[in-house]
Each structure stands twice: as C-alpha cells, then as structure tokens.
Length: 297
Figure (cartoon, rainbow, N blue to C red):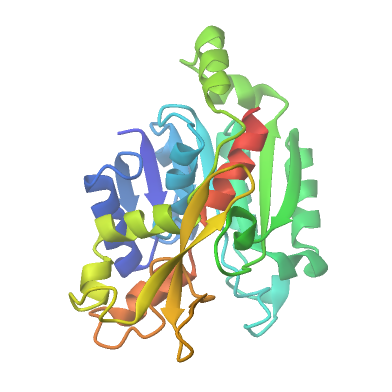
C-alpha cells in the first residue's frame, strides 16, 4: 500500500475506506489518530501521505492531474476554523492551528513535494507568511494562489488558498529514492497541462461511489419528479459540462449555488450532518488538479 491517510473524524475516515475500496483514490491505510500523535518514523514506508485527509480530495485531485499513485508527495489542508470568517477568529492562538504540527513532520521526513490548502481569509492573519518562512528554512521553495471553485465551472465561489512547496535540498533525493530520473521525467511529462474538467460531474461520480449517491439522497425519485434539471455551459474550450439546476415557477431552470453532489433539501438523508460536514470541509478536487498540473508542467 502506497498511501497514508490521517483523518481523526470517524465518519470521514469510514468514507475514505469506502473510496479506497472502490479504487477512486490511492490504495492505503487510514489512521484515525490526531496528527499530534503521529511520529515521523511511522511514515517512512509510505509513498504518499495525506494529512487532514477529509474524504480524500487531494488523492482524487492527484489522479485527475495524472500524478501516479507511486510518485512521492505529501498533502495537507490544516483546519480552517482558526482563520475562517465563520469561526471565532482566534488565529494562531487557536488550539486547532495545526500547521506547526504538520510542519514538524515535514521537517523530519522531508517529502519532495507538498500540496495544501487553507481558507483565503488566513492570508490577513499571516498564515502563509509563516508557512513560507518555515519551509524556506528547510530549503523548500513555495508559492500560493487563491482560486475559486467557479474557476473550473462549479456553480459556487468557494475561494481557497492553494499552496505548493518543493524541496531544493537533500529532501528531494531522500523522497525520490527508487524513482529513476528517466521514469520521473516520463511521468512528469504525462501530467498534461490542458484539458477540460467536469467539476460537477466528477464530484457527483465520486459521491455516488462513496455512498452519497443521487439515488439515496433523492430517495430514489427521478430528476423530473424532484423538480431538478441540468444546464449545459460552455467551458470556453469548445466543451460543455452539466450544472445542477432547479425548476422555478416561471418554467425556467436556473443553476443553484450549492456544494457539488448535494441537494439543497437534504431532509431524510441518513448521516445527513456527516455527509454535509464531510463534503463541506472538502477541497474541490478539480481546482486542486489544476494547481498540480501547473506545478507538473
């Protein structure tokens, strides 16, 4: 098994195991301990490590970007609550500010490449400044961009800070042991920089496979019976993709700003809060895939 997933929420951890079983994300093990309890020596056998793994969005994004499961990488989306405008705004004083814990593991294990994400509001709190300073002291080059979900055609905004860090020192050699130069270049070349991403479609397929399917969420009714339809939008490159829409009183269908794969009325859904929390805290994999592709080019 090549991947390690660290996720302390039991519902999300169970969701991860289903996605692994269905082959939608990299094969691996799910560790439900707090990241604070993870020791560096426990991670040496894994090629990929995903912290704050949620429902596996980063692993899914890597596959969307044609990043092979056996290519070394770490990912992490530290808790956003300390910096979110919807939280208490305690910032670095919040006990859930776990970048220092994540960084400690990075500094000890020195993975070659790291991808991560945080709420955009963290910028004004100096979150990325601290991250960049910490990584630079360990000979990593890093960069970030704030990208919304609608940048890949999703019907909602959801601004997020995405970052990438790459080792400039011995971490690259250590992390890429068993990764010949010729193979590395071949695999890097296979991660194309173009292509259209069906943001809503991919998310819904992922949800269906994980048990949060349309059939279960909609109690088995057809799309027309639920008042649902699809709008087809031009992505700008000659292709189109469907966007969930609701049938309005004037007879028109209009796109709705909801999370992918979720209906606005979720009454009667088993594990409703778990599903909403798991999807609501997740990254948009199609946006992350574009970040990965830009780095791989």
